[in-house]
Amino acid sequence: MNFNEVFKVRAVKKDEKDIYVITIGDKLASTEEFQTAKQAQMKINKTDWNLVASLFAAMLEGEKKQQKENLKQTEE
Image (cartoon, rainbow, N blue to C red):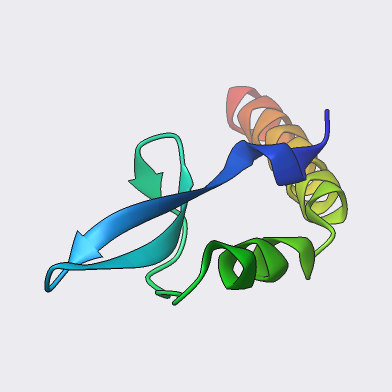
């Protein structure tokens, strides 16, 4: 999966003017507002989201392992 595809640029009205925001599903991914869709897309493209997702997955895996070890210790 390419995690860049999770982000969507959407136009929204603010003071009767279009601005662009970055979303994940129906949630804002950032509070940053952009004047053009291209600027918003460039912001998304600046980061390798696959690396970020890999880091997050590794952290979750480590946390799960730690919880199992803690559970074992409390059972002994």
